[in-house]
Length: 181
Image (tube, rainbow, N blue to C red; front, side):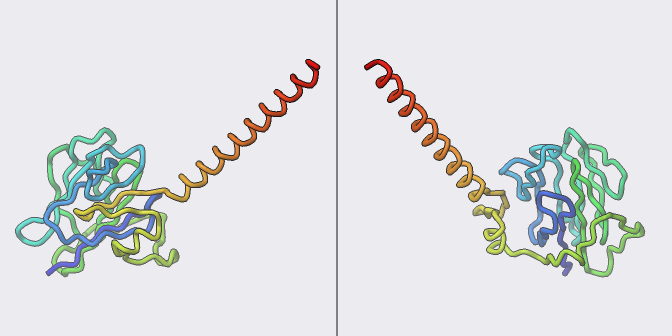
């Protein structure tokens, strides 16, 4: 039994790992994607990861706008490629590390990236742990980004601006009334 996972190496989800336990995962920017990465260079339904009969995973570009790369080689749309341990996937501007510790899918390619996850102190994040970093896990296990803190700050700023505008209007109205007398 393999223990496959992907780890996002780029923002906005840098350091987040997703254990692969299902037979199919879609990767994209839309909330409907199994692995949702809110990044503008990623298509709504960018690529997919499929569990094959031998237990390995394949990667397929789903006709994305900016393409999918595997170890710096562009994939042809709708042409699946078998993934090996330490393969580097690029979707849009986001790098993703594929890891599969089963001993039979060793990559002959040395993975080169500028990001060192050992120094970040990150580890596998559970679905419940994602809620603590502003993420939402849907019923089907999809991960989407929620920014409640930013929403609350935005609402607070709007409320303050509204109060300032209303105070300014009240002051202006009082000045008009006083000069009219």
